[in-house]
Length: 443
Image 1 (cartoon, rainbow, N blue to C red):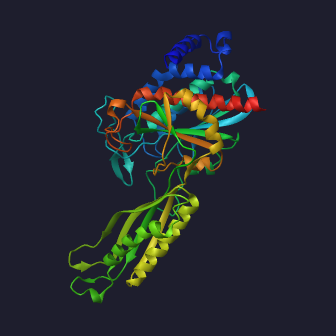
Image 2 (image 1 turned 30 degrees about the horizontal axis):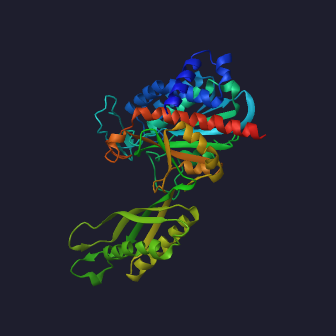
Image 3 (image 1 turned 90 degrees about the vertical axis):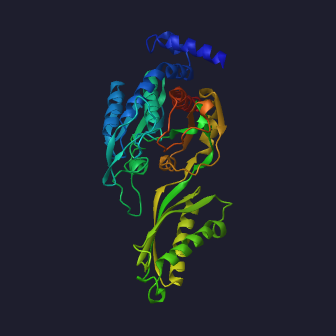
């Protein structure tokens, strides 16, 4: 590690020379990328603090998008704005022919009231589902944007030496749009951008992305080959019965009893009807609502939950069995059940060949890397990786002395250790240069 730091100090001093001087050109692209990452660390931290203080919900990221677009334009890139909704896409054309690498960062925040007491804490409020809500970067997307902005600057500084091109995708609404209406399919964020052709003109060969996590120490990277993050669907069930007096249940149809039986029966979908040797699965009911008075059996009960698997085909099978189970259990009580499963995210699958190829790069970028277990959280990076080979990895942002005690992602107290940003910049920059050079050398 000390030898690496000494080498980086040399690289940084050399990088202070004009971008394409003979001394700078003598360094490898990888070395130049590592040096640039160190040099841009303070800039990235400043960007993150600014974005953190001014968070924006999905499809409302106008200020963030403007900041990103202005920076990319200043680097001389071709920039397209309002992609999908508020997305920003830029193309850096390298000085030599070669493949196209896409790099993605998500820009949206969450309807969470911040409780960190940071000097740059958010006081922002925005409309969410018809109500004004506090907004916070409680998942670290501010770090993703800052890392990719710095990566863009690092790669722009060596564009003439790049054997290929880079497409930068700053994506809105990874967490979902703020004005979302259930309609059977969620069409937002990555899914929308893919449908609108973000991976074409020029066509993308591979894509890389990262996500910060409070579960890992600062600067550590975790990866997994193959299925990595779960697919997910929002489960909604409406059970209809016949209202009657609670003292005379035989005069009606009790949707409360039918709902209780459905909740119990759904646990058998995974434990008894799903081949979990293919992929793990989870079916959970999170809400159940019905009735207005203690002595009235209501007309209907509604419930909602989540469905998660690590295989899209298994997800489809589980969805169908949920529907079949709910409808038949309700019918046995004389009630009816309407089942609606809104598909949110596909399974995030890291291309095994690409992952194996890029592991040496991650080892150079981080002080430590490890294989992550399956993650039951979901990510719409999955939609990019369904179209082209992709690699998605996790970056630790928690100081070692706070590990295990830090507030998790999506919580009001979630914190990002700024010192992690430089590792993210190194990883994204060197993944790009190493992949481009690998392809160039193999031709």
